[in-house]
Amino acid sequence: MKLFSAPIANVNYCLAENQKQFDKIVKALGIKETFPSAGEACTHTYVNGNKVICIVQVNKKPKNKMEYYALLAHEAVHVYQEVIEWMSDEKPSAEFQAYVIQGILLDLLESIKKEKK
Image (cartoon, rainbow, N blue to C red; front, top):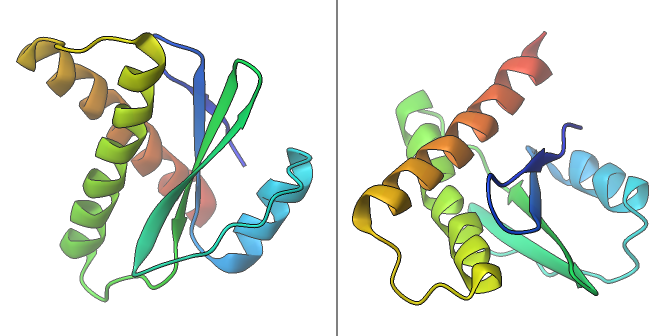
């Protein structure tokens, strides 16, 4: 498991491509809460003081690789939304939003690449 850090704010995030990986991540991070999973994927947020961890959990991988990438892009936006909330930035610029989401998505895609090795 690779835990990534958002370029701004105190938000970390990672990818779990199945329930087994998700359980392993939760245990490794010492998270005691239970998280209901929903849909093909969801982003779980755990907050402990000023530490925020988002776990992008994939419940059912689409068969098509492009649909999977689109699903991860969707979840990257949810991670970004946590970043903005913790920054207390009510109106970030469109270009700022695009760059942060792009970085988060690249990290999630890098996780896929590492898992396949």
